[in-house]
Image (cartoon, rainbow, N blue to C red; front, side):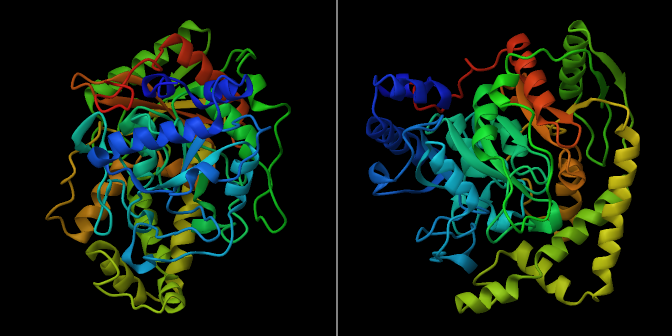
Amino acid sequence: MKLHEYSSFDATGLAELVRRREVTAVELVRLAREAHDKINPTLNAVVEFYEDAESVPFSDEGPFAGVPFLRKDLSFTEAGRLYECGSRLYQGFRPDLDSYFMERARAGGFQIVGRTTTTELGASGLSETAMCGITRNPWNLDRTAGGSSSGSGAAVAAGIVPVASASDGGGSTRIPASYCGLVGLNPSRGRISGGPNRQDPGHGISRRFVVSRTVRDMAAALDVLYGSYPGDPFLIPGPERPYVEELSSPSGRLKIGVALDSWAEVKLDPEIRDRVAETAKVLEGMGHIVDEIPAPFSASEFLDFLVGHYYLGSAGLDEAASLLGRKVDETTLEPFNLEIYKRAKELPLAYAEKVFEFARKIRFDVGKAVQNYDLLLTPTMPCTAPPHDTFVNMSVDEILTLDTALIQYVAVFSLTGHPSVSLPLFSSTERLPIGVQIVGCFADEATLVRIAKDLEQAIPWTKRRAPVFAGIT
């Protein structure tokens, strides 16, 4: 198999070749390494490609048998492997346990061949850190790949691997999916365990999954990765049948609410608004009922909650620093996160209760506003991928305000727990990907799989290739 052939397949297709013995798992890892060596010097998406990648254990019976897979260097741990969270605070840290997620990934056949870049502690929606530098977007090297699953988005979009892990506490799976032209699902709260040590990250807001290039890879990955463990705080019903079976199931007639206006201070790009409206027309043509909906929450309360969430998120840094034998200061944290940490230490304990009340109010308001819909259709992001220097020369308060406004359509569903997927349905006049988000009812990924497959067939995207792509000679 040649590199251009390898990069043309999705994970499901590669696994089928392995099962038919047309290619071996070792050959796939070598091709992934070849793609990495060709592309990564330009993108800086992979912080480490394992020297021993060809001997990494995996299951040869799983649905992804032999497929190379990259781990985001945040939220997922492998025993004995570096876990640095994009931060000098964690530099050189090697945990002694595997995430349940990684155990399931291996059991499903994935060969974990390395780890991808992430923003420091997952705090930014852009793709640059003091420790790892800039991760560039394969569609335009001057634009961000999105954060915090920066490297995973860039690596999959560039064909280094067909699937990589991602995590999402405020859009961190769907942002790079939108900016890099990928499928990015954030499952329902409780669908995929964060254990054994992170069952409730971000007070139930952060969730884990993957970015991929096809809907069938998304469905198959759900079948491999879903499930709860003892000690998990959120337990939800399992699927009625395997998610891959939903790919051939009819969607029925659904009532869909569509967002065509801004929900926060950053205005919705007219071109993106038009593409969302076009998607709504396609769905109407399939027989679904589509109604326009207003913003389902207060923008000011949303800002107050997310700012508070940043502050609460820094609460564990002292403990982490102590365990690592370091201090929290300018040598270990970037200026933005250091300032957030300092401010948080000055806040009274009662502040947490205030933040939790904002969260409760937003969940209630959104739940009430969307209770009569089977799905929601929204932009993923209000704009296409911005330049790398977007936050340069901004104060902390200006960054908080802008970052919150940029994630207006995605972060709210991280908070509410609804499953939501960004689909790469369109390209802008500047040839940058435009993601459109579909939001499902709680615990109903099955309907998302069905409608995502319908849209993949109606508005095909899988043949599009970024200008920086491993298979281009």
